[in-house]
Amino acid sequence: MTDHIFEVRERHERFRGAMFDVVTDEVTMPGGGVAARDYLRHVGAVGVVAVDEYGRVVLVRQYRHPLGRRLWELPAGLMDVDGEDLPAAALRELAEEADLVAGRIDLLIDLHTSPGCSNEVIRLFLARDLSPVPDGERHERHDEEAGLELAWYDLDEAVARVFAGQITNAAAVGGVLAAARARAANWTTLRPANTPLVR
Image 1 (cartoon, one colour):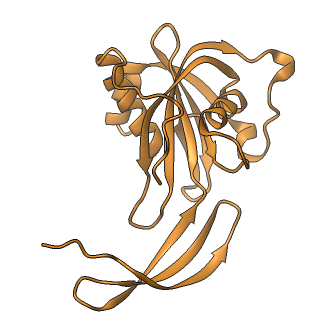
Image 2 (tube, helix red, strand yellow):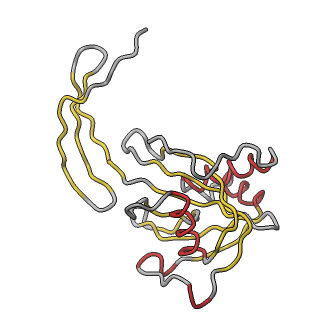
């Protein structure tokens, strides 16, 4: 079997937004035809599994309007600051959403969150050697973030919450399970934080 090259013959932009665009590509198929494929072009995101000296992970509970309810998630945010490298973006999100500073950050995993309809990739980092952001330097939260709820869970308990269906956010599921596996391997599976991202 030969590898077919899925050539984009035409691209039609349907919507342009700050976080994502909606496009339709006319793509060549292996049988010789051309098919239309609609998807989101996403700016990408970073997230942080922050584990303290007691083996606890911090989670945030945030309202997600498409679902109409709050989800337990990792501190995370968009790759939307020009020139900001990904480890710095992750540390910024950790400070903004969890009021934490990390003395050490490593690459945990990369996830394509929904490749059937989006090119979104989220890079998840493991943060350790945690300390609080000083009170006077804390980020002022707005909109959905204003109602963030923070909680610390033992990493094993967080894994159990994944399997109990209490943590369903894809990045949180992947990050919690990857962190538990990395800890079981004595953190030897971690990669350098500045490893190039393949989108």
